[in-house]
Image (cartoon, rainbow, N blue to C red; front, side, top):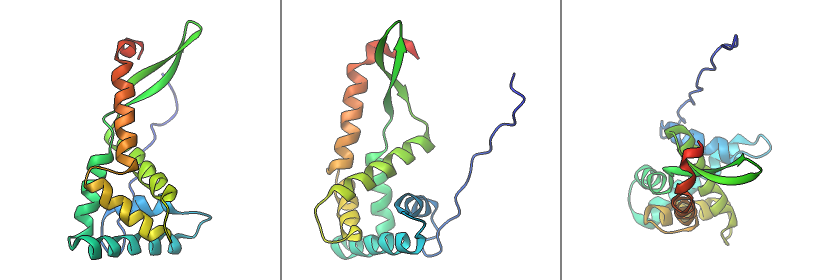
Length: 155
């Protein structure tokens, strides 16, 4: 038995405008070189862009995009007996959200466009409509987990 204390799960504070924790998680992942005000500007610009494009509440679109991108299972490399297997593992809710945020931001950074706010906004809209690179990444992960289902007993 370990003598170390169990780590407490950190809760993020809600953002000032929408009062939503998911948005503050997104801001903290957009953050580069400690410039949080720039990350806020990027995300709020993306939210206003989604409102302009769709005419719907941007929080609703963000939640739909997160639901469509959040994975249920992932594959993890396990080395057993000299060979490496891709073992499918179920994902918890917090880890699934973190993966979805990372995939959304990676997909929006790879998009062609003028600025990060518009690229993120269009990626959120595409993910809410169930297409886009982040959704494709989730589907690839699920396909790989399904293909390697035979190794599930190596958990």
